[in-house]
Image 1 (cartoon, chains in turn green, brown):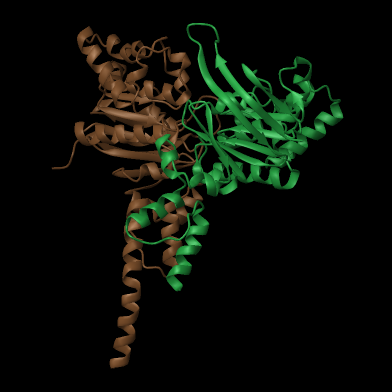
Image 2 (tube, chains in turn cyan, purple; image 1 turned 180 degrees about the horizontal axis):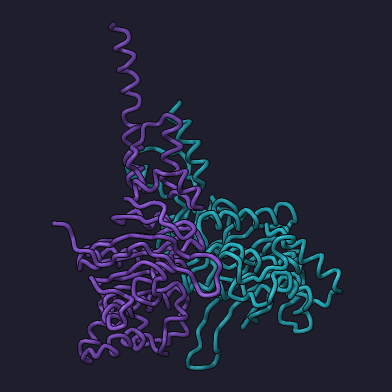
Length: 282
Length: 295
């Protein structure tokens, strides 16, 4: 079953002088095992929207159903939070325990699992994120490098074995290698474990490369949710919203401006590269 | 005449108390007045430590740091050095101090004793530079992360420092915000001669810089123009870095026999070069065939 967002609106501090409508009338479904990219200008409502997916925020209007469970129902919230893992920006700031294993065990412990199960899940999650437990479990999280800390924080969420993983800018602040490692980890969670992924990113290249569909938010409204190809065909509108285009798309536009005829749009660099080489050899 | 050196590091060694590892090892570099330079390196390579040495937030364990000839180790220089070297950090939540945006931007100049009318002018100009003038009277806490960061940058600009150091200041901004910050610092550099030091994980942001310094495991492993640095693909890889996407595409196209310019590093220059290559392609082939026929 999917996550369905129905007529969702959210206003911060409603009824006060500071009332601020952050989301209006969002309708969208996130399928099982789908990789959904979420893009939008700063302040477009991305973070507000994803915080509704596990009930951290409640709709002012409309509703969000996670596998049929209404996030407005307090009694269901614990269940919903175990289904939807939420990884915030800079999750490593939330590491606090003495050892990596204790930190990763925090979530499963809160789920009320027994010690053996918790231990098994912690080791499984550490292995998944590429931090071999035999080497990392007993270390202090504060001795890890930036990229390792990020992965340890991610392991803490994965140890709850969520069905959906929601990530807010998971690559922010990482070096290029670290970014690639997190991306391939997220992709393998989807392809090997069937975890549904919702990833907020400013990198059009990353969402273009990995997402099945992309949701575009603009000033609190859903502008479009469609395949990368169809989304990036709206180049002008995206640019107007202050968004970028994938680098391949930008190059195609630049080549057209120089009089070259390019039959279709490209949003992935690898595909554009192949096309250019084929054209040269033709 | 060679430009004056504004920041000079000689044989810097640095180790945090309680750490077993040296954060910086034998780093020497100098930055000239009016230069715009980038410092890149993997997470934990020592970039942030390095830039905290620039305004005496940290003092070196070995070697010396001089700003405009003033030794940062001499406490009498600290205030003067900090007036000249303004820092903008990655996390805006640690930098905003007041509740209203324009008060925050005015906080620095006020502390420097700038007259109120002048503060007003500087605050308006600085907020304009980061495209946040509409938010002047808004509550700082209600801003998004990217908006806060632009306010923090405006706060530095309002103090009119000689050197602006941006420690991954664009890391949390969206593409438009990043573009605005980049073009702001580039303009400050070009038009006002402000020296700019940017630390960044976005390699493409360094393309407009005069020089790029590459740190790896606390050592300075490379220094050169963006062109020089991004041609050292192996060394970059070893330093956990990567060339910008258009540079990588250029190299792949070259390897496949497509005659694009080795100088192309960004979208525009690569498009120019590709358009030229394709425009000349059929003609060149025919000509060769003709020549072959004639001989």
